[in-house]
Length: 114
Length: 114
Image 1: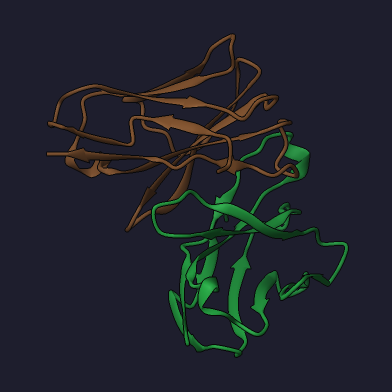
Image 2: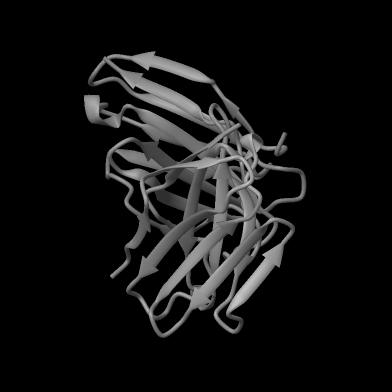
């Protein structure tokens, strides 16, 4: 019940295309869903996050779509660029636990071809 | 640069040995987290400290221990090392204890157990 399942494992997109990464969870207590971006040799960095009181959040070319009833959320990268090539992790947590514990998905390696 | 520093960058040691990984959080951050990243297990939460006190525990083995010192730096001690402990170990920090606050990741320590 603590798992977050992420798909696909890897993704190849042409420059200018839309990259879509999906995550699913079981634990209905989760109420905070961040996405982290990791470049080779670096630590993950927060990209965008959403709480379940909204169905969508957009920041620049990055959008999170959230479906509470399906317990799924996804990251859309519009107009994908070669510089977006990285590994993306979804995560989930419970704000009321009063801890910072994040449960991460397995990660998706995105390659954007020029 | 996230502002989180980790030392050493690389560590090669033999099975059965003990090592200590060090982390200095961003200035002003009270929470420190330790994560393990491996190819088969992904990014796994190990433990969180907040202002010197243990706040949350994840999938941390009994052979592993951590602490946060009065100056807020943290150390992760790994003992009786096994081949399977080879991984990237990340430290992260945040200003508060709950997951709603961005966690800033350090560059990681790559541990190789031979």
